[in-house]
Length: 421
Image (cartoon, rainbow, N blue to C red):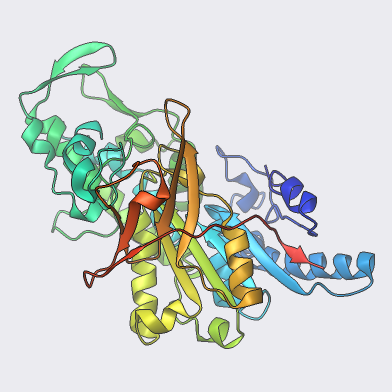
């Protein structure tokens, strides 16, 4: 999996490298973090969290210089999900290492990201198509995409009593069912009403983590839990008999606190002081799918807002850190929404030519196979249909700012990669 992106990078004329973070990839085990006695090997955790990233860059630059006889002129990071977290780690911990960082759907506050994936089974213990129907037109066009989920006021409780198909059977929505869905969208919330992490945005498919079955005896099962079971069982509790499906609300939030206390300091990647990165002249370009069911886009937005408060406001932060949200896009480019065509080239233009991107050119194919183009708006602007023209064309859309201003958008970029020699 590590080498998928290297081919296109090399084909574009760039020297490229990747790292496994010091461990083999296995979604269903965390044994690589353990010593023989099952205690945590903190050296390996450090390698995974931070050290491997700097070493990758140092080695990559050295090999590039040895091969070409000169140092790379520019160096960039490009990663999604865990790779997005790594990009933010470089910006925060190694600010002078690279000229630019492209970080997509970053797993900021990684312990919380993992623990939030368990929340649906907690929400189901008492027991997004319709939300899309209700909120699709908020951006002015009925296109199967919610452009601004924050403006969606859909209430799952309004579905109580309605008939719908579920696993091939017609069912009637009960209050318990609707309340469970409401809790999943709300996100992990303590019995005291404190929301500790964003939930799944409206319009997002719920089948990724709301993959819970309840038998006739009320026993809950989270199908194919993967890391959601491994993390609490192997890393937090070190109990081979632990079953995530049997967690109570109280036990869940106890584990939440434990995960943050024991691993937040090394895995969170949420330092909002990016002054060293800014002062090094580097640029951070980030985009996140609004319909991401694995890492809520609100997590990235909240980080950006914290940076703004720390570093002089939105305008000052835009000089070195820009965020773009992709309506309808799920994790790392999946889903019905348009996906950035070449954000790395946009980053290159910003770093090397001083051209900060106002939009990111994006595209996809709809169900009829037609090309759909959009220009993703720079946060906090949101897309708005102009009410004229083909909704499948970027020229028919504008970016609407929070101050009510609008600008017609339409910029296009190419493609690039890591070390430029």
